[in-house]
Image (tube, rainbow over all chains, first blue to last red; front, side):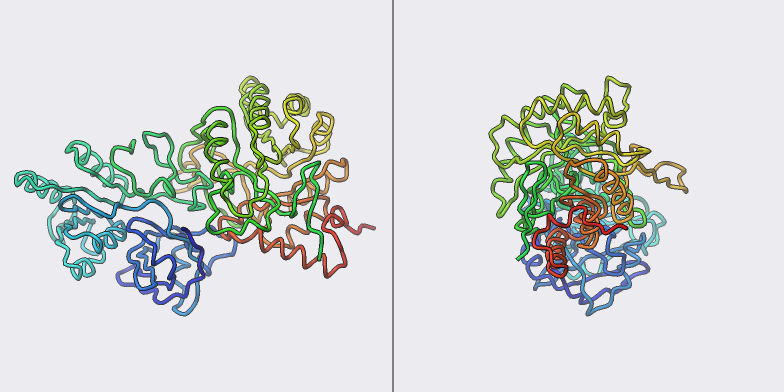
Length: 254
Length: 308
């Protein structure tokens, strides 16, 4: 069931330069939200005719829904001005999320704010390892939250300012090789820029392991009605808002 | 109690408020969050005979007061629509009849899809709406709707293929709407939908490329409303064909302007994306207006402009 709720804002806090957590009171959606699903938020500080903005869910529990966002454009800049105590209209839970189970170790591969749905997912899975990369250590988000969940983390930065120097696939490939040598099962879960999604898709297909790829697209309706948020798949042009955002690796055509 | 029912060229609507093609999927997608009881019709997204992939990404760009889209009529074809979408739609609570928007690459395809829908035995289908703003493959890609002779020909063919109430949706970007309205009337159309989107383009100046994958698209939303009101006004002056008006209806005031300009009903389009409850609010607002101004029936508003 999808809902459109008028939700009280509980926090809208900048936790790192340009990145914020927005937490709202949306009990119906919080109760049914699955990791990988998203919400569509009407930004009250924009004109009333402005389109809604879609956000991956970072956390949903106790009647509250949290998203992690970056101020990248007009909508998110306006959203950052919303004060706790004010309300926003929020539509959700939307889209097809990650599966609720994982056979073996869950390898979570995140880029930028793509870590958001992986955090919610990590809460539900018994054993996961987070691979997270960025240009520099300031791009690595919410590491404290993953640490609090007890998730093992493999961090990489292009400039070497934190963790492994290079791309996130470096440590990922090392771990994959170790797990394979030990005969341990694993699945891949990813969210981030298209380049990263492609790299993880290729690995899932080559290794014949389940790969769950969350695709980020601009959206209009979020409900499957407008056909704006397309990703090429084996079925043709698929709508990310209802057929995704999470696709199986073998469904995607890059 | 205001009588809110209207008659759109033989198509009876319990409410003067519908949804517009392309903004409400195939009618069922919004079923969890929209109250359908105040809708007089929903208009399904354009259907043709065969599946069609649509345009490359990006398919939309938000602009001040509006939206430019170039979806490209993606769809699974009429068979899928009848079997799957109409099946799901039959489960929607309080659902009104469906106006099916149709299109084709040739006159024959228009007629074929009209006939297929008319003979499918689906009681939910209440009317057909022709999109004549798509390219005519045989005529080098010119749209069917841009030449009154071609328009007359394609509407005549569809008229012969269906007994369902037939609505023709016209483009606003013509010097005068009158010859197009006349062509539809002469061809036996029952009603008009006004307006389709306005051709538009958005450029990314940093990359120096068009934003849309299709390069150009169609403008909708609040900013097109005054343009649409004038087209409705012009069409109503020259024809008795009932008009379903769309273009920037966000609140009851916008809908009432359309009715006073000559429309019999209105459709909510782009507004649904930001506020899915727009149709219900517009319905309530029209009803309140009628009560305040002493109209017993919403039909009395059609063309009720006081002009000296």
